[in-house]
Each structure stands twice: as structure tokens, then as C-alpha cells.
Length: 284
Image (cartoon, rainbow, N blue to C red; front, side, top):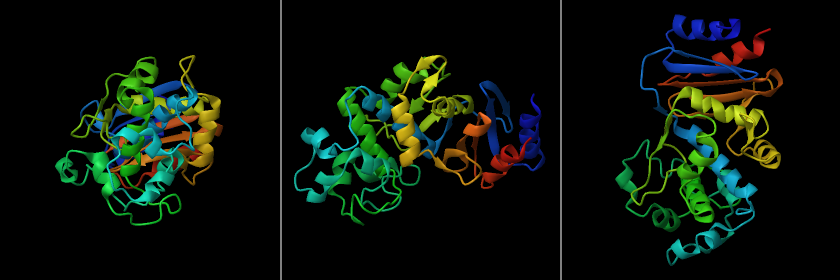
């Protein structure tokens, strides 16, 4: 065990932090440890959104998706009648920046029962009254990434989990993965992805390496730079040069590009998430 990883694990154990497992990659050398015994694959909650961004990147790289496309054009044969005409202005860029005009917490299956939104989630979303001006105001909502799941599925002709299994999960050696689906069978996109901590770490390594994992190019350098420049879920943490994504109850994936370090952990009600990042930033 490296000195840095030993410091991280010692801190978590000594302070009784509610973390199931933690993984660290130092320039590609991966270490992992169990802090609190649990299932190998946990719900990573909103970290799932970064995986949906990655599926969108695969579609983008194939020329199947543009950030300026109108989502109502892509999903034209699935749009209900009588929607607010402002829906026709919303693009994938707007969705991935949470400029949807929907209220905070919209379509959150981690809080509300899945049946609370009916059988047709897309129709429910598009008929729901806007709470703010779409394409202008940012309001974080799971509805944005359910929409992106549907958009990518439409242009690629397969659900995003199937796409990612073939293009990323299998080549990267994922142990297992399962994604919660809506009543009509579409992956939620925003949450509900169950994977191991080590496999979550691999997404950070993919972006740290400019879209290459295990010697195979998964994403173009253009998509990686677009994600990091626009802040499509992988956003600056405020600690050093690090960027990453967090999820409800203390899930976290963070990349320190200057240090060639990626860290990930899965937890339960872990609130002090900056502690580990500070240990890494201060480590010499």
C-alpha cells in the first residue's frame, strides 16, 4: 500500500467515516480497500450523470449528436401534443448544463417512488409546467439526464447501458453494472447506476488520459476537452486543479490531473468529502 493510500484509509477508519470502499489510481497504479463491508456494486447516484455524458460523447464522436441539435427534433415521434413551445429551443447542451426550466429535484427516483411519475416519464416531463426560463437559468434536476438518456438512445439505436457495455465497460474490465430503468425500459441516466468503486474510478482515468483507457481510444480528445471546458458534470472541486462529480449520500469521483491521481469512493451519508481531497492535495 502506498503512503498516500495508507493515509486515506487510516483517516477513514480512525474517524469512523461512513464509506464502503475507496480506490486510488496513481499514474495508473490502482489500489483499493474496503472500509465498511457492503455489496460490491453500490448505487453511485448522481455520479451516473457523468457516465451519461460519456455515452453522449460516443454519439458525438460518431457524428450522431451535436450539442446544438434540438431535442424535440431528435425525439420527434415521441413528443406528446400540446407541449410548451419553448421545448423546441432546448438542446443537448442545455440539458447537460441543467438549463431545462424544470424545478429542482424533478424526476428524482432516489427520493420519490418510481411510480410517482406515471408510466411515460418523457411525456410527464414535457407536459410539466416550466419553473424557470429554459435555455437560460440553471437548475439542477435529474430530468435533464433522463432526457439525455433518451436522446442518446434515439440517435444510437440502443439504450445507453448497452452502448457503454460494448464501448467502455467491457474493454475497461468492469466487474458488473446495472442501471435502473423507467417503466418503459429506458435507463434513468441521472441516477441508479450500480457499479463498484474501482469501476467508478475508471471513468475518471478515462478523462484524465484524454479519452483513452487501456490503450484503446474510447472518447475523442475534443469531447474530453468540451466536457471539462463546459462543465458537463465533471466540474472543478475548488481544491487545486481537481475536477470531479459527487452523488447523494457521499459518492465521489475526483481527478487531480497535475498529480496524475484519480480517487473514488462509495459511502453512506458521508458529508466530509473534502477531507480526502485535502489529503491528496497536501501530500508530497
